[in-house]
Image (cartoon, rainbow, N blue to C red; front, side):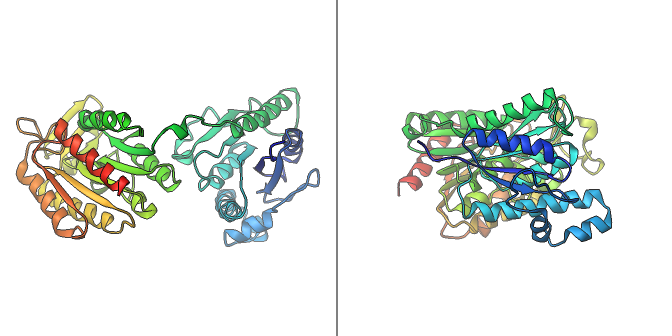
Length: 406
């Protein structure tokens, strides 16, 4: 008999005790060990064994249940219980193997669940039976692999619909926990690569070469969420190396564009110490929506309509000075091997000679800043082509494989 799986069951047992009691019984019937975590502020339940009570959750968040009750601030209570649950779960996972996570709730319970699972690594199933499954919760889910299952009716006492769905939710989680990826062992390793419309030919060629060498290649669209997801998955130890062709999100973070991945972009591989080859791809541009949405302070800048809903702004010398410095300083903190590769004839499809953003004097400011601020121990490979030239892709891949095989 295989060892029993261990599941975290997270929820507000004060107001949803009956529902969670039924979920608990459904999980136990599947031969699952349940760690029940109560996030309810108003009390608890005696219907099933509670492993971690809400008093500990509140304390982990730097407060107490009595304070939360006294304040009568629902929003603050939800925030604190979400933070506390996340901290408790992180500590718990450092000591135990957790195979899956499940929760239920309306707006409040769902918010706490999504906050609580933020630090749970990719690949561990996270399922929430919720009244909000059809709403846009992308801001709260972020890059996490969370499954939302519609509850159809409110999670407010058992009935003929909720019984079926709660049982199905338990079965779905059990099925996800028992899935095995048999093909994974066939790959030499997994490589993350960043892509954009303006770097697609390069990334396509890089991916083709890497796959022919037996590597699993995962592409991330550098539109903000893509870069953030890639960084988060790197921190979840999902990759053996990163080929960061498209670092354009740094420019959006600087100028308030719509494709910012936040200030932590270009830091995860360095923290994890995995090999990375990094290119200042598409740092010639900042992304905005339709032309009318471009901030007034940028209306007189060089703008290019990529499509009716995307307007690109050419970065200038001052911005490139800052971007080159930031690019270098982020890489200087890397614990692992790094190589920077510079495409001297154009860092995007539209910045090479004859194209709308062709401005070699501006690109040279970027390159000079990278050279100036980069740790001298980090190699800089200069390629006398544009980024989408097949030769550039071959060199970038060759440098990455060299790092991985050293």
